[in-house]
Amino acid sequence: MFTENDLTLFKDRGLTVDLIENQLNAFKQGFPYLKLESAATVGNGIVRLDDAGEKHYTSVWEQYLDADGNILKFVPASGAASRMFKALFSFLDGESEQPNDDFMKAFFAGIHQFAFYEKLNDTVQKAHGCDIDSMIAKGGYKAIVACLLKDMNYGNLPKALLQFHMATDGTVHTALAEHLEEGAQYASNKSGQVNVHFTVSHEHKELFKEEIARIMPEFAKKYGVKYDISMSEQKASTDTIAVNMDNTPFRENGKLLFRPGGHGALIENLNDVDAHVVFIKNIDNVVPGTKRESTILYKKILGGILIETQKRIAGYMELLDGGQYTREQLQDIVNFLEQILTIRHGKEAEMSDAELAAFLRNKLNRPIRVCGVVKNEGEPGGGPYIAYNQDGTASLQILESSQIDKNNAESMKLMNEATHFNPVDLVCYIADYKGKKFDLPKYVDKNTGFISEKSKAGHEIKALELPGLWNGAMSDWNTIFVEVPVSTFNPVKTVNDLLRPAHQM
Image (cartoon, rainbow, N blue to C red; front, side, top):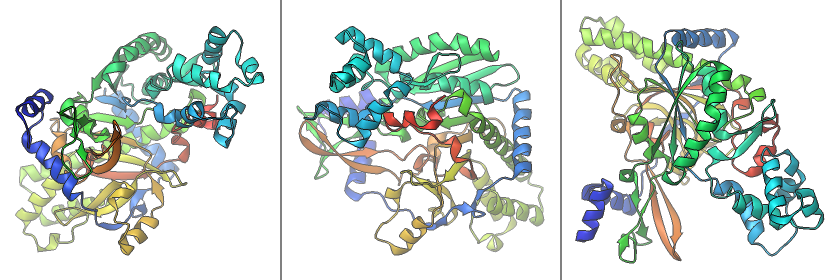
């Protein structure tokens, strides 16, 4: 099936024939649906805290900061913002010269409220000799949109580099700037060190460096911190082969086509970072400083839950590794798995002490993630469930709707019982109790993934996405779900989302 040129291409990209054949089999066979035990709800896999709990875990986190905790803020930021401007591209390419749908009418009605307004106004003046208001009066709507998408290149830049918010001092903050400021507010340890890592595309790396150099000194001075900012690119070895609709490899001018493997590929980038505690949040889920109080509070709370959980697991691991334990102590660990980590098995009573200790050690000795979840108010995306694993246990998982069998009445019933949504608000512990980093790719469920249909040069093709970073890529992690306020979830999926109150100063 593969030519000598193909084999050379595989080698150059860090791929193997076995890996490619596994991908081709995935296209042919698809991915199995996950079997659900139930939706995770408050009291059944989701923790809801009272005021005392919030104060306790905030204190635990602040003590960890005072102990010079090893912390990193990890921000996937490589994607372009083109989908954010989909409606504007359609308007620009359409026949109508006037905004004739609700989205475009709202865009122009609120145009003065966008943080990028002044920059856009200057761009319009340079290109057309008059300001935005004059252009609107003349019906020059498309010229304004063209200035934004093309002259300012907002249609191709990553979201990280777009002007998102106005600050109280009159400056304009990009999404990247908001993440740097956030880091100083909840992830600065006793030494004043703030570590932030961005995943970036190769073509935008220099622009990231320029923006960081521009804003970092300002925030370092304002908060009295030292930033250590790093970047990485998605590895070519995580790209996946594209196929024709009959599942044979697609070729363009005789050459195989590879596509990025989706955000699940970033498990490799996460595996390379030098930290024990890692906060993960999407680049577009940021708000101005005046609206950030609940975000900072709950970041500290999630961090405190993580640290307390990790310490308890470390104590259990020391007990199990020491070999001097009683059945009662083993039962205490079983209770911890069931009540705190929501890991269910039900066969512990049938095991000998040695068998049970080995089972418990295996379940405890893995990465940990504490995930904020918000009440589902109709946002698209994944949610928290309790799903069965291949070893017969059930545990907490973040599932996308495509992983659930729509033709199975019981699965659909459980899916419809879901009360919460995954806003991608995670804090993780990626080292074992002795401080040795886990090899994170070992905890990926390779039986999960996504197949989608795309087009390339007029041909219909299929693309394969790797198990999602917070889905199958973290399937075998220990997980805790915590209800967080919806005020902490303010994604910018379209440009008009920036007109929402949460994104206005």
